[in-house]
Image 1 (tube, rainbow, N blue to C red):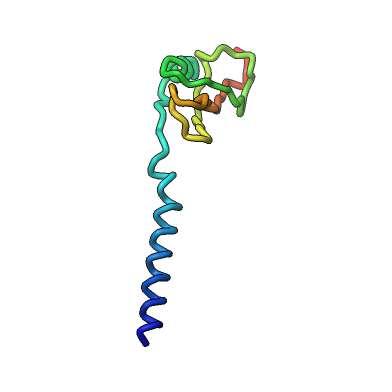
Image 2 (cartoon, helix red, strand yellow):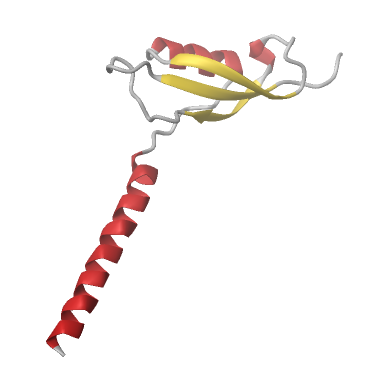
Length: 100
């Protein structure tokens, strides 16, 4: 009987620890200000020290960034500027897909 209680307590502790590790990266993820034009967002990220790569997700990639908008910023390694590894972010950009 004692052995069964001990196994149940151990299983519960392992489960709780696994859940904490699974959710910890989500809680630590940075959020980025994506308001304004794509040019504004990219300039802000670069001024903070990030190396920015653009993912053109929709529209014409020949449009100036000041008429485009950002739909997401991804930092796969969750690195910060100034660290030992380059802090690269991938910015998802959409632009108008029409000519006026």
